[in-house]
Length: 215
Ligand code: ADP
Ligand code: MG
Image (cartoon, rainbow, N blue to C red; front, side):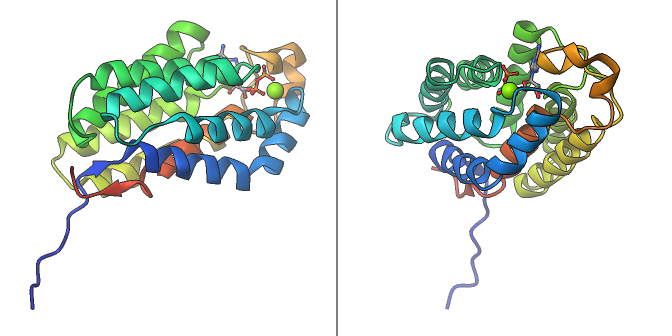
């Protein structure tokens, strides 16, 4: 009998999008509660509607870069709230960074997430500490890069990124919002976890459930 083990070396984009859709749907009530406290209470609905549409639109026979671009375009067109254009831009930029690469292995994924973060920052102009999705995504992208450059396995790098995103989301609680709808509340935004940072942590964690052998 073979003792060979299958090493998970790449993220499957269609599986990632399915895992995100399931996760945001399962957490929709929580995300909406968070957005009700400091926004307009639509974040759970926005994310669920958007990623359901993404799952419908993504064709897993296409190369990963193309799937990400389709996912991004779908979010931009289906989600009215700030999170639609922001995550839409993120995934489109990620797809462009992936280009013709055949698989989202560690280095390709690290480049894709760097590009995603850069797209969010370019569009939304949020800085670290502004109480936005950047406070979860930024630490996650850096942790993933560090894990990949350490040469460890991709599952461990993604687990570190997910932990960093989760911690980043929690770090938004004492922050005062300086971007987006929550910024209208001024000091009253303090003491609540940012909904977009919270869903971003779900999106990063979903990477770990979309890992498989390459190709
Ligand atoms: P809306 O605020 O339009 O109702 P959502 O509720 O879907 O949209 O998303 C709100 C989330 O979007 C916030 O919690 C925050 O994380 C994120 N967000 C809002 N504005 C920005 C921005 N300029 N840059 C980065 N993220 C932002
Ligand atoms: Mg909202």
